[in-house]
Image 1 (tube, rainbow, N blue to C red):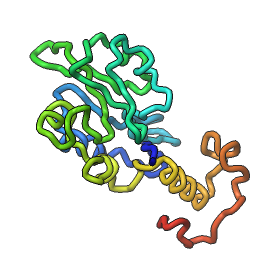
Image 2: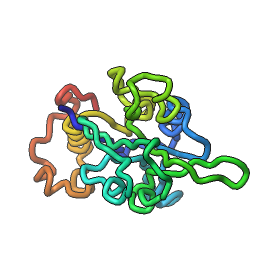
Image 3: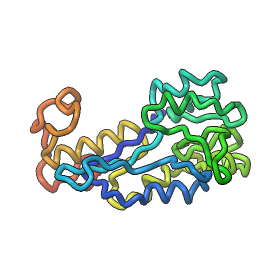
Image 4: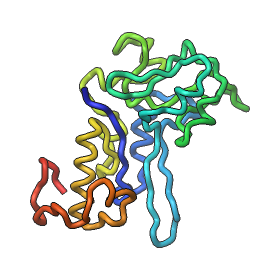
Amino acid sequence: MARMKFVCDSERCIECNGCVTACKNENEVPWGVNRRRVVTLNDGVPGERSISVACMHCSDAPCMAVCPVQCFYRTEEGVVLHDKDVCIGCGYCSYACPFGAPQFPSQGTFGARGKMDKCTFCAGGPEENGSQAEFEKYGRNRLAEGKLPACAEMCSTKALLAGDGDVVADIFRTRVVHRGKGAEVWGWGTAYGSQTAGTPTAGTPTNGVTK
């Protein structure tokens, strides 16, 4: 069974916010909630990098650990979802999540707390796949339709990758090898060894990936 993951290639992200717009449009996200957002570091200075951030669907998700009513659950594909019918809006998950994924929707002039909302990897919720109830609460279930999340599909530079974690990692590894910047990527030496080891010939596609 594939384990779904997100990876954002900061060398390719151009801060266009296409992923943010695609998510809002596809899932009709509640007002005041950004299931996905683009964060820029060192804005306007040499070394500036942007990265698209959302729920990372952690293997050991802190939101699941702190939820007092256990409204969070993990699917067979490794996607972390939550049941809004069980959620009591305590906000513990928003404090525990290092990515700021769970958020309160805003309603009215001053805002109102309610059921938490978060990225679903376009995998819907506990309701029947493709049902109107599922869409109204969680957005479109693209995974059940055999599609990837809208944010990744709409990324113009293919900086945002989504899908089977092994495939996504292989694509990113191939990009880094071809860029010749392995030493600049955190954990590269531990994960993949020497920067030059196994470097493919320039211009040659690897594992079906076009650079």
